[in-house]
Each structure stands twice: as structure tokens, then as C-alpha cells.
Length: 116
Length: 226
Image 1 (cartoon, rainbow over the protein chains, first blue to last red):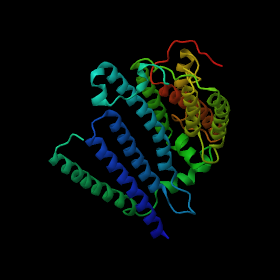
Image 2: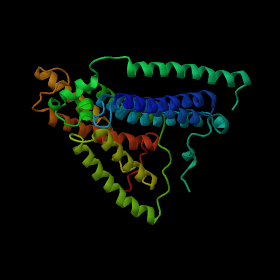
Image 3: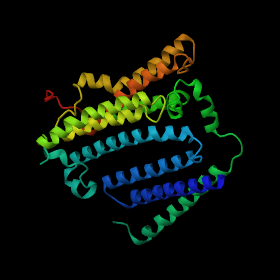
Image 4: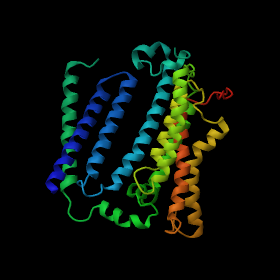
């Protein structure tokens, strides 16, 4: 019984670790700010994945509530941190508009008026 | 990609090494322990925590400090966004079809948020899920062209954004003043204290997420609610 649980945890946890590494690779090797931001979010998703895998204790046992609580608050914090990073990116675009198209890739296109 | 050849090889190698280290840590975390884990301890004390949903017990009782600081992180992120500049230009007002859909979806999101907030005591749900739904309602309103995403004026928005942290800290300090520890709920009152904190937190999280989506300090246009 505990063998199956361990296998499930390893499978899901390793997928989370793989996610984390893919995000880290993308974060290091891509220059545009918004790609780095997406990569950071993928890294975060990997961490949440690992935590959920750790919480799993079999189908008939309730999961460990402590990692679940961490993931729950972590998601909301990650979203707000992403929003803050986007605000930073917009400010950077505004401060140096000539670099906006090549370096940052234009974090937000709403700057110039309303959407069509 | 602008990386030269040796870099392109070095980065994956380094990441593979980090991955192996992380996997080793994960493996020994899963297998290298004997005896009680935190889960058993937490689940055993759930009946005295004031919420029968274990996750809510952990969030609002056993690890209440953590949740308080996480609400403070949300508030700090919003303050950062506001200090970086004004909100982006609003979206174009939605056409009739989207507008009537929004008229349906937003009330449903608010009702679902209230339901999740209440059910969080006994079943999966709680302040963070309910707040996320309220935030989604705000995003929907913003996408359909409401310049303030359905949020109140700036003075009230400030109150709303700080409400979660404020209620949480006030409850903690009151309990400390009564002679219990900071955020140590008396079991008889725990349910109602948790519900009070969660209500404040839900409103705060919803308002913060919606205001964060606007991407800056609210513009001083008068709200043009339909």
C-alpha cells in the first residue's frame, strides 16, 4: 500500500521538479522580461506541484493539510507578485521606450490607449 | 536566443545537477523519516480549531501568523503597483452580447464567492478561493470596459485593501489584550473569530486582485456604473 503512495508521490513530485527546472532554464536563457516572468510562474507551479505531491497520503486517507494551506496562499501571493512585476515592466517601458520593443518585448500594450 | 555555444551547454548541465540535488532532497524527504508526521498532529487537533475543514484550520488557526503575513504581502504588492504609476487606459466598453453576459456572470461569481467563504469551515473553500472569485468578477468587469473594475472610489478602496490585514491584526491584538496569546483563539469563539477574519480577508483579496489587474493607481474619473 505504501509502495503505491510512494510511487504516486515520486511521479507527481518529479513532474513538479521537471517543471521547476524547465522554468529555471527559460528564466536564464531568455532575455525579454515577460518571458522571464512566465518562466518564474512555471517555476512556481512546479513548487506547488511538489508540495501537493508531498501532501498525498493515499486515496482513503485525508491529505496532509499543511502543504495544501501553503499552496493555497502561495497561489494568491504568486498572482499578486506577478502583477507587481508587470507594473515594474510597464514602468520600465515608459522610462525607456526606445528599448521597449527589443529588450522587454513590451510588457503591456494598453499604454497607448484603449483596445480595439 | 542570444547565448553563445559554451553557455548553451553549461546551463542545462548546471540545471541537471541542481535537478539531481533537488530529487535527492525530495526522495529523502519522502522516505527518510520514521514516526509521526505533522499531518497526524494537525488532523488530530482539527476538532478544537473552530473549523472542521483541516486546510482552513491550518490556514486560520495553526499557521495564522503565516496567513496574516501573506495578506500583508498582498497589501505590499498592491502598494508597489500603485506607487509605480497610474492605471492603464481602460478597455473599450463591451458590445451588447458581452455586456449582458457580464451582467449574468458577475452576480454569480459574487454568490459563489460568498458560498465558498461560508463552506470553507467544513469543506474545501475559504477566504483565498472566495477572494479569487471576487477578483475574477473585478477582472471581468474591467475587461468589459468598466474603468474601475467595479471597485469603489480610492478612499474606500484603500480601506478595502487593508481590511484583511487590519481585521486579522486587530483580532490578534485583542486576544493578546484579553490575556491569551497573539492569535490564540479560545475554542468557544474560534469559529466566529475565524469567520470574521475570513470575511475581511475575502473582501481584501478580491479588491486587491481586481485593483492589481488595473495595473496602477486608480484614475480619478468618476465611476460610470451602468
